[in-house]
Amino acid sequence: MRSMFFGCRSLTSLNLTNFNTKKVTDMYGMFNNCSSLTTIYCNDDWSVGGKVKYHDHMFINCPNLKGEGAAYDSSKTDIEMANPTTGYFTTKTNTGIDHVTAASKVGDGKIYDLSDRQVSKNYKGVVVTNGRKILQC
Image (cartoon, rainbow, N blue to C red; front, side):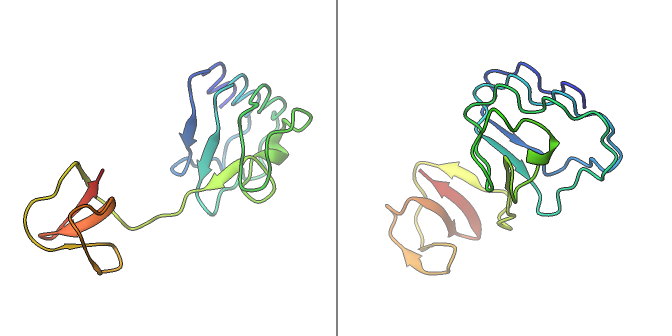
């Protein structure tokens, strides 16, 4: 994973929830120079497995990065910041909502929010109508 995202200056967020890093040994410079990166998502059991030997400069020049545990600090750029508790990662929670369709308007029929309350046709957000989940913008 050495320099995997190195220089991805246009990258603003990254989802690592499906990454399995338990056997990884090299993360040197992994996010180096991702200057627009604001969020790195991980799952709630994120672990680097303790096998990483090369981990320096992982977060060099990531000034916009902010995690659950810390905002970017240019003096803290190594593997100790690759976690959601005290570092630059953010836990991505599973909402259980799959197959959402984006729509500017829903059709006729009753519309419900995700708490099963009936809402108006002007409601913004994820709604359920006719058995379909729709993101109403």
